[in-house]
Image (cartoon, rainbow, N blue to C red; front, side, top):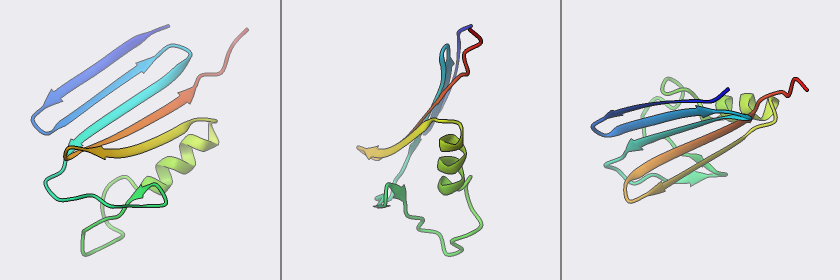
Length: 90
C-alpha cells in the first residue's frame, strides 16, 4: 500500500507518505529565531505548558513504535520529520 497527501497554505506545509513506513513532514515558517535544547525547539511563549502538540510527547510516541523524529530550521523554515516503520505481515 502506498499513498501521499499534501496540503499547501501560505507559511505552512505538510505531507504524509506511507509504504513500508509512515513518513510525516511538517514545515512551518518562523519569523522569530528558533533555538534548540537537546534537539527540541525551545518555546518563546509566556506559558510554557499550554501550546502546540508537545515535542516530548511526539518523540516519546514515535520511539515507542520504533520510529525516529528530527527537527531543524533552515532559512526561517522549521521542519519536523517523523518516520514510523509499519509492521510486516509476512
